[in-house]
Image (cartoon, helix red, strand yellow):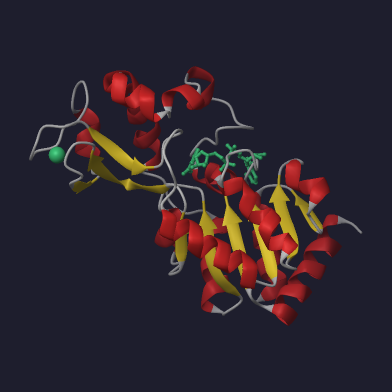
Length: 248
Ligand code: NAD
Ligand code: ZN
């Protein structure tokens, strides 16, 4: 079957079964201009994420980590949803999609119009004080503060409200994700390398509970040969645009 026939087949299955849950990673936001950790050039060649996005590095050297954060968020705060995000929002409106489980922290699913979004790694549109836990909207002015922004209440360092390496995932989000993985009929993996645990475990659970697994990615991942039923190779925006032609 060629790619186009495969997409058509997936669309037919979605129409018949509905109950889709999407599981997204950094790859879905690449077409919005935000670089992924893997499979893209730029930011992450300069900064190793496992070092710079580690909580211990942040606690010990906030100024060093903020140098990377300023570069990343000067892109991310301006980014707009792309066609892939928009198709997922449309699928929710048409009652094909139950929810999006995302590893992303860019808030683009909500901005595209999805109502039910489970954020496994937090939301980078907010800053949180690491001393008193006050939260602030992450407006662009914070990017100009040297060496890094501090809490206006207690002067503690502010950190984007996202899960760093070495931190645990929000429990409620994780349990909702597992419930969705258990109850859905189609599990749609988009733009994730499947390497960042514990989030990466969720697709295997969906498959074990009987979901059909559809995967969209530029190349193969650990899921591809183990659990993927339909592999749609290509850019998320292009594949989802085609899928929407068959769906709506
Ligand atoms: P990853 O960077 O490890 O992998 C990205 C995957 O997307 C790769 O498999 C790549 O082949 C694929 N990809 C790249 N461009 C694509 C496109 N146009 N269409 C389809 N697929 C494409 O991403 P991950 O698995 O999400 O893990 C990285 C972690 O880093 C996540 O937990 C996330 O929290 C964080 N992160 C988030 C953002 C964001 O919020 N936009 C950006 C970078 C990293
Ligand atoms: Zn504070």
